[in-house]
Image (cartoon, rainbow, N blue to C red; front, side, top):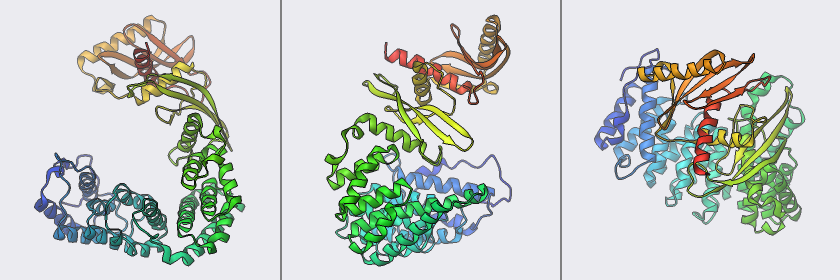
Amino acid sequence: MRDHSHGSDSLPDTGWIAHTDAAEVLELLAGISALAPFTSGSDGEKLVGQVLTHLAWRSATASVADPPLPIDAETRNELFHLYRRMGSDNSSRHHLLSILAHGGTADDLRCFAELISSDPPSTSSAAATVFFPLTVRREFDVSALFPKLLDGLQHVQLAAAILDLANFLTRQGMTSQHPAAGHKESLTELLGTVVGQLGRWEENPPNDVEIWQRACGQVNEGIALAVSLCDTLSFIGDSASIGKLNQAVELGHRRVRVEAAAALSRLGDEHATTELVRLASEPITRLRVLAYADELDISSKIDPQFMTEQARVEAELACFLAEPTQFGIPPQHIELADQRNQYWPGYEEPVECYLFRYEYLLPQGQYSNIGIAGPYVHALTADLADLPVENIYAAYAGVQAEHEEICELELDQLSRQQQSECRHLRQLLEDAGYDQIKANMLGIFFGEPVLMATASKDHCLGTVVADRLNLYWYPHGSKTRPLWAADAYAIYKGRNMLEMFNF
């Protein structure tokens, strides 16, 4: 395996790794180790990333057809030394930790604990990924991980993941005592430090946008660590932590407040229980509050209106919108726009569907749209506010729809027959009075060719979808987030499927 200094679009196929035997895996790892470390961005690094991804995926999806990755003592030793050789800046070496975590034997887990606590992944997201296999297993030797893993608490990107795992094991009854019980004093002190830092950020946030963007990662890590610490200290049950937990309840960040209130409630603080119950009224915290209410046996104190199915799916949408890949914060306002029981793609029985109108008041202005919850949770970028409710449901059904007879083709992918169909559909648009037609793509919907294009009609620019029988026109108007080809095709697909299911 050569390490080229420049990237390439054509790397060797690595799918064969799914069926390698123990000797081949060992030889493969030894070959990679001999060439490590790799130049960042090189073909060698990319190819190794593919290889390790396949190995980790094989470990995660073992079956009779694709047996688990064989890890004997020699292979484990090779994994250990390869991880060290690849270096902390390598973007794919964390897959080696995932392989060990999926292995699950006491020796695998001891190796995992040694590597991750002394030489952790460089990011908190990678650290969270490698811990995930341990949260889906229900039988393994906890002593192979703890107390060794606690050495990793010194690494800020790792601390929350370690504590979350310890909390999970305690919550599942896999250990009789919280693994971090012997560190209660230092953990209480750490909570005070983190809460103090978060409080200073809330009181004096930076005015400079660039400084704020650079610091967001640190703030998010601080929030995650505060949440984990609150949960940990509640399990340990030391009254000496009450003062720091009370400070956490006063923070503005609602997730931290929920965790601190739940921890204090577990320690017998009635005022904190009242605060926890109150937080059920806020969609972004509702699901966590309801989970803690069950755990703490205080569900009877929650207002019934916040325990309905509508309240739960509203909370699911708010949490979705608050994800870093979406807005990063919950909407300031969210309300029910429509609710109906209907057949939905992927469900055998009718399902309750909800549309919610949500609103953000941002420095650059107001932003509002309509999202879906119930069959699944999603929010489109295109402005759906002026569409009929049926078309909004159709848009979301179309986005979710997957079938081997539904696809979209780029124009340069078309066969001669498809090119002819595309020309025919374009002619239909011209005959209907559209001009400035620009074809975007051709869809195939259960054998029916469907053209998506931007066009002008009556001096108005818009998006049009055409099949052999119908034309569907969506004028852009003055919208800043118009419906584009993919959105219009989603409505087309969804409308046809919903009408088919709900005849």
